Length: 449
Ligand SMILES: Nc1ncnc2c1ncn2[C@@H]1O[C@H](COP(=O)(O)OP(=O)(O)OP(=O)(O)O)[C@@H](O)[C@H]1O
Ligand SMILES: [Mg+2]
Image 1: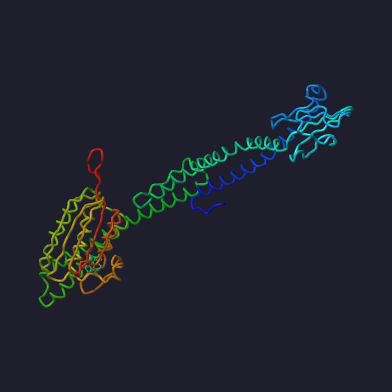
Image 2: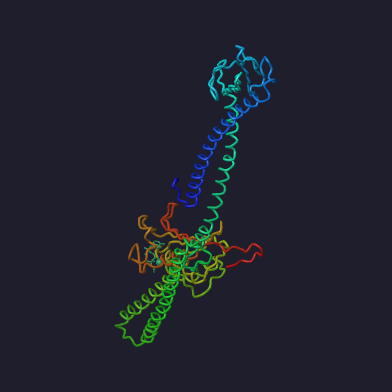
């Protein structure tokens, strides 16, 4: 209403606070004016009262002449009789009011000061009771200001009360927001519906229905992937076996074509495995549970596995700096990440090149670096190399799925993967993977996964 804040609670607090402050101020100002009027009436009443009582009782007590009351707030009383031109009796001889003032209340200027006068005419005398207007105003203002006091306490109190009430009412929204934020494919639990404000019920129940549908479609996807894995692998394995069995019976003139056939089967089977691996990583399916793994051990094991390829291509592969770094992952996932990156480095680095591996652990992350002396990747194509089936050049065989698999896996573990051309003046690519380090459980020093 008054503010364009993005937070509903801030909007409410400010709007309510401003509204209540305006009402409070208007109420305060009107009380002030009412109090002014009230006090003036009260003072007038006092003047007429004094005049009445003087007539009845105290007339004789008033001195014949007085040098002045000395008290500025005092009421001045004059009594005129028919015989005298000056007041017969007065409480302050310096103040001589107009004897012919109209009966009742009047305002007079005496000695350049405004006076409020009450004139009472009896059968043989005129009694005048007067008070300085400035004194009356001072008294009325002081009394009205006291009426304002509660407002100064009430307005801040209203702000505090509004703040706490709105925060309390919105607390449930905040808690709900945090639960909704925590929803992801690994945490698809329905939100609690009990005890919710009615306004939130439709939202929460539609979120819950969405979670239910998501759970169902993820279950179907998982089932489809495992069925597909089985259905595709079985015939391909059978084909491979049959080709192996046939090998001896192939006539020499057909050997080359037979090898092409076998290579085709190999490629198809690799492609099927890669597609399933990617689908599994995307659908967050693991056949085994994650465990605490030493990154360096997995890197060394992958290097040993790929050593024959490196030797064949005369590529110097080595772990430059392999620090201990423990992460929580399945071994097959971590192996797939390292193998794809080291495999790429060996595949795209020309013969006689070098591939360096680094493993660091710092600031809560394990960092795996694979640096090669290959051609690198043109800068403008770097953002696309993680796309499925994207390949920079077709000169070397491959399906363009390796990096997509790497990214899907590391993202799933809350890590990252980046590729950059070398900045040290040499040609080559540096692939960097980060994964969250395993945190020791504080109380026991036990590493939990
Ligand atoms: N170390 C590297 N040096 C140069 N180019 C690279 C390197 N790594 C990847 N690339 C380029 O990025 C493309 C995508 O790599 P990716 O690993 O996804 O697929 P691939 O290696 O072609 O096939 P595969 O699915 O068998 O891994 C590659 O085709 C290649 O052109
Ligand atoms: Mg690859």
